[in-house]
Amino acid sequence: MKDYKQLVAQAVYTAIDGQLSEEEIMAKIERPKALNLGDYAFPAFVLAKVLRKAPQMIAQELVEKIDKTGFEKIEAVGPYVNFFLDKAEFSADILNDVLVNKEHFGDATTGENRQVPIDMSSPNIAKPMSMGHLRSTVIGNSIALLMEKSGYKPVKINHLGDWGTQFGKLMRAYELWGSEEEVKNDPINSLLGYYVRFHKEDVENPELDEEARDWFKRLEDGDEEATRLWKWFREESLKAFTTVYDRLGIEFDSYNGEAFYNDKMDEVVEILEDKGLLQESQGAQIVDLSEYDLNPALIKKTDGATLYITRDLAAAIYRKRTYDFAQSLYVVGNEQSNHFKQLKAVLKEMGYDWSDDIHHIPFGLITQGGKKLSTRSGRVILLEKVLDDAVSLAQEQIETKNPSLANKEQVAEEVGVGAVIFHDLKNERLNNFDFDLEEVVRFEGETGPYVQYSHARAMSILRKAGVKEIDPSKAYRLTDENAWETLRLLGDFPETVARAVAEYEPSVIAKYAIHLAKAFNKYYAHSKILVEDDQLEARLALVASVAEVLKESLRLLGVSAPDEM
Ligand code: ARG
Image (tube, rainbow, N blue to C red; front, side, top):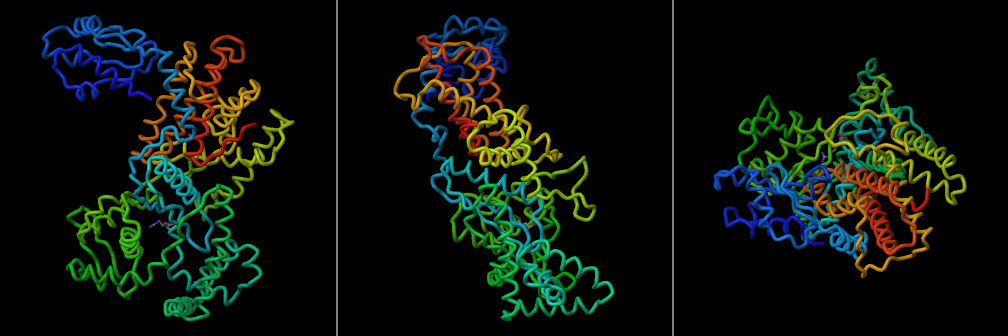
């Protein structure tokens, strides 16, 4: 596809006498919101000072001077010069680009094949996965897909919370009240149950804590039984998490969690010591970060135990060595912002200039009825149940809209799960949002099912027309005014992907997909597609291109696009 903005900039450049460079003009060119103001606009008032003339005059004179080839028209409106692209030319250009490149339309090579570890999901063993972990999972997955489209090699890392003193408690609790069968049947809930019971009973029996410490010590010393139990709890928990990941269609490249760094922290502490960065404070070892306006990073506790940040230091260094990353991302809730600021600051102090390539990608909270979720208050959202409910709502909808659909169950699963993912991703990630299941699976409005439905509708038009494939080599010169918004949006896709990547913001793609679906539905409502005339093929080329780009947008969010629904 041609760079139309540059085309406009060149036209302006040749018309003015070198008062501005082409780059300067490029930077000034705007995209008017309303279609009747053209496709690009040059604000003539930027020349008012040098030319000492009224901006309206400059705009009018520019319109006279500018070479109009390649444009439908060029108009002066107030201080602006508005450019209208040649619709037939643009249509042929963009449809050709989509039809030739298919799902690779919009691909970029920005990443130069460099690796980008993405720390995502990272739930804690023996506890239920929270909505926060779900957000991290779907946001991380979409960012991975976006990075890949831009030529990076994402590495999805599940930094499991699989180490810590809580395992000592869990083992002691299991020893007292646990059963192997129970854990096998329902690992998360039974393990959580033991843990909760431990905390109830240790109020009366403080010696329990002592025993738990012993168990954890055994684990740290590599005792066989403790290690066996730890491995087993970890495996069972992971199995339970995996059923959720499978339904979401998400896989990881690594499950190296906190435990993986057990033997990698001594080195970190040594480097900190060598560089003279460690200070003693009330028996603990800290790194002072007052220069960064941050609280000190607590590296080693009084009893010699290492901390969350010490592991993350080891993990960051390990990732740099292993992946030689271009960037290293952490998709973790907003509430850990301070932790990641400290992490970057300590790495910087250690002399690693690549600490600048570490980015915390924070996100907001999910609330219900405006209130924070909390296990204690009973305000919990069980992910499995959300997915099940979403799927049955989708099933009902399909039953009323398309009862004869062949693979109803499969489609209901894709629509229900897709709805939950889309709902999460359509909001800017930093915003908190309220969870309302009915809203999630609506087929209308700004929802996943609406976008999926628009895609399926495009596919059904192509089926009706009996076209298998559209010849991508022809020039499809579509001049229908009603199709213009859709055509232009197709042309916006590559820069939209680039923006989503630069901002680590999947919502940019979700909003784009809604916009495109809306424009397409409007077009479809105003223009008949399947009528025999000389633009039939061009209209079908547009429909096929819309289907392609909607499907690719959904894919980038981790949502599937059924051909029929
Ligand atoms: N397990 C942690 C939690 O649930 C998240 C870990 C995030 N990743 C990291 N490298 N710190 O809060």
